[in-house]
Length: 147
Image (cartoon, rainbow, N blue to C red; front, side, top):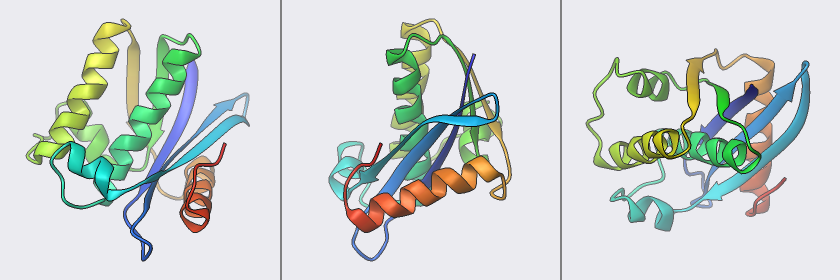
């Protein structure tokens, strides 16, 4: 099983948001990635803004893509986004069309690759969420992806 912590951050003064994740094994970070999220990405799924929720979903999608590309089929994702967790677990309806598209992408990936995906909530104070957030803020400051 691969364990991944994700974080998203909505648009800042430079117009960029971020989607970041870290992979943890035996209490050590083994990989990290942070990507800028721009308005054109949001526009592709019908959103006119780079919101925090949009970026949280993008971080889960990027983490899932990483896990699949590295041959993992049993995936545990932790996020501080209660919305993502509750929508994925069907506790909340998805009323925003852009988020609906992103959730559909996650579900399609799960089906396509026959994945066992668990998405769970952890508080913002979790040390790995804070680390993912730091990478996301650095990515926004630099205006480019970091890995």
